[in-house]
Structures are given as C-alpha cells and as structure tokens.
Length: 73
Length: 135
Image (cartoon, rainbow over all chains, first blue to last red; front, side):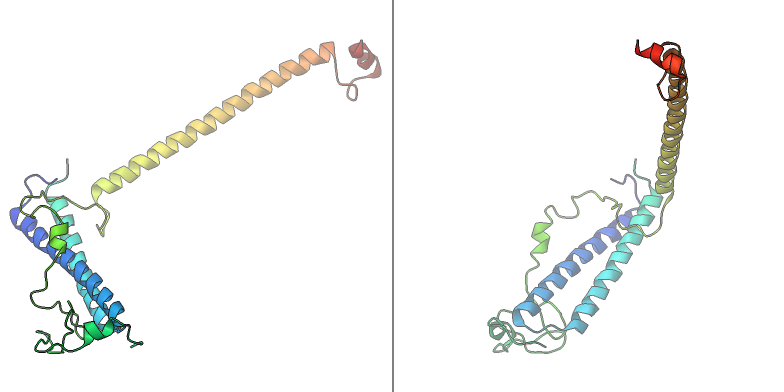
C-alpha cells in the first residue's frame, strides 16, 4: 500500500485500472459473443486487444511512477 | 467467417429497432456487443464492477509488482543480494568439499599405515607379509 502517493497519480491509476478491467471484460465478452454467433472478426478483436494493451502499458507506467514517488515500506 | 451456430440467429439477427450506437450495424436481440465494431451495447450492464468488490474509492491503491517494464532499484538490490548469498553458498560448499577431501585423505593414509603394519593386501604386499596378515 502506498502511503502519501501523489493524489493525482493515484486517482489517474484508479481510472486506468477500471478501464483495464472494463476492456478486459469487454474483450472476453466480445470473443464469447463472436464464438456463439460463429462470426469471428479478427480485425475487431485485434483492435480491442491493442486498446487493452495500451491501457495496460499506461497502468504499468503509473505503477512505476507511483512506486518511485513513494516506495513501498 | 465460419458457419453460423444455432445461437447465431438469436445473436446476430437484426432487432426490430436497435442498431449499434457506434457504427450503426444492426444488433441481435440478445447481443451485448456489436459484432461489426466490438462496441458494447448501450445500456448493457458491466457486471465486472460487481465482481471487483468494494468501490474503488474505498480500496487502497496497491502497486502490482508484475507489470513493471523496467527493473527498478529495489529489484536490483534483491538480485544482488541473491547473487551474494548464492556465491557464499557455493564458496562454502567448495570449502567444505575441499576440507572433507583433505580429512578423508588423511584418514585414508592412517588406515593404510595401520593396515600396512597389520595386514597389507595380498597383491601389493610381499609374499611374506601377505601370509603374515592372513594369520
């Protein structure tokens, strides 16, 4: 748990973490729905996966900055 | 792309009046996502929020150690500490092995001396001593 982490970074991290959770949920739901429908659109899935990956990279960067700002004790 | 499953009719058939808000493609009656652009249907519940448990405001912010792209200083320190411990262990093992070998060599010499005076092996010892040892 980070004590005294910069508030803006922590708030931003919460937003991005929720976004990563939502994108992961949506990618799984979309894949499941395509499987049920028997209509796989790889371009759509890939675009969603890229979006998720970008959010994950941003989350990792925020984690790194938060850890650098206030090391975990 | 492939053949439609039995559920495909229910999922991909155009609904009476519903179309994707993002691309305008027709949505199936029970579809949660647009299969053309992947957008979640408007008003479709995000049940993952329930699975997350507490609202994010109440949860402490924790740092995930998994997804850090660059090795930071604490990780380098732990790696260095592990390397030092392993090195010390290796040196200890080598020293123990060397000392044990030396002790064994000393003991073996003693045993040889003792056996040499009492009973030497018949092949290596002269015939007189060999017969003396068997007595």
